Length: 199
Image 1 (cartoon, rainbow, N blue to C red):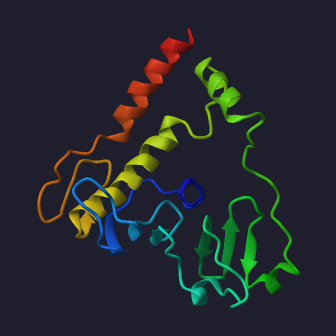
Image 2: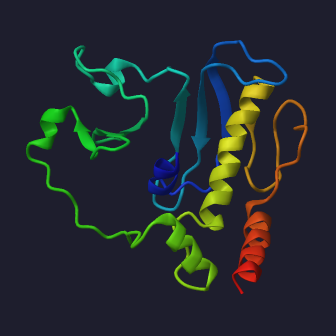
């Protein structure tokens, strides 16, 4: 989920909802499969959008993916649906426009985002020693983790959760069992621990 979270400049969700699950969850286990939807408010120059998570063998419809009957849906991938088209990205392969025939005249945009110059371990160590921040630093990972955990909350609570995520506000039917931690507190606290450990 990190790719869409970054590409869509998501800072928080305004609501999260369990769309469907197998109903086999217990107080100690999550369901075998589920579909979760987050409502994302407008961000800077981007309009509101919806983000869906499918797991446990559930997939978007073949019509949405415009997938020919002969092809199998990927078990690990992302479909972006926009006003001007769609594209699919499956882990381990290059993104492709949907339908694939649109790739014929496609010219990729110039690379403008920074790239990881080493492996994740070296990148993390460099950041700990005061170098360039890691791409998945706590400023990114904290809000992303909080959004994912809201999906878990939606599965547990089984009804729509609304509020300003990360700002300790809730408009659900009853208070959550555990008050969410503000991502800034996590980022600052963990960042200080890592800097001390790197000395």
